[in-house]
Length: 142
Image (cartoon, rainbow, N blue to C red; front, top):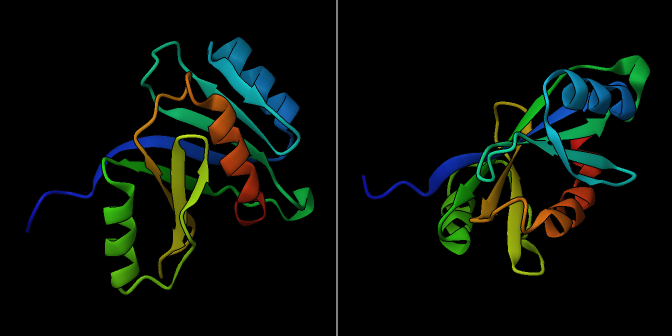
C-alpha cells in the first residue's frame, strides 16, 4: 500500500456564530492562546507548540448557521499529496497556495465538507502565513 501521504491532523476549522464570543470562551474557559486574529479568522492553540490549531471562522449567514468542522492535515511532501489527491476520484482539488515557506491546498470529496492539506509547519513560527492562506479560503469555510 505504500507510505501514508498524511502524517497528522494539524488544524480544525470551526464555523461559529460569533468569532469574538467564541474566542473569549476558548481563551478564558479553556486557556487556549491566540496565534492570530484578523477580520476573517482567529487561530487558537494550547500552549504545546505542535498541538492542533483551532481556527474560528464566523458563519457567513448566522441565521442559517450549521456547525461544520473542516479538518486540516499535514503532509511531509505537499506536492506528492497534491498529486495523489488529484489522481483520486475526488470531486474538486484547488491549486497549491503558498505564503512564505508554507504551502497548502484544499479539496472537496464526495462526502461533505472541504479538507485542507498543509506542508509541515510549526503554527507558532508560521502563524502569519497560516492566517494569510486560510483567509483565501474563508468563502469555502464560512
